[in-house]
Length: 154
Image 1 (cartoon, rainbow, N blue to C red):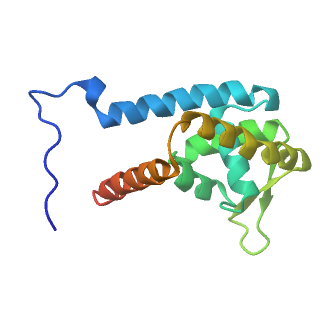
Image 2: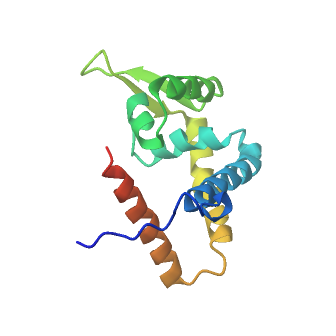
């Protein structure tokens, strides 16, 4: 396997040309816009994620959510406290293992979670406007390859 050339050098590094900086700006801009679009649902950028993960069956516990969204368990617990106070989720102790607390969407949580994919899809399509399908697939591939490269650092 050939080694990738060094795209960056310390003496010529400029933050505005950094892929990491651009990805960070994209993430921040998307987060602000998601906050704006979720206001009618009473959600923040952080709060829609556990709802969608629960709705799609990707997670069942705070620890699962912590792993999926990359937050420490304390931050996830505080986030879930806020979502629970809005009546969108409930914590239910596992009958199989009393140490485990499962998360469930309430009826209102299901109603709200059902609206989230449309909001996220609309925003994603807006920021991908002008991309061909091939460019979209390449973009996803590039991001996944970069993530895989960083995963090798663990």
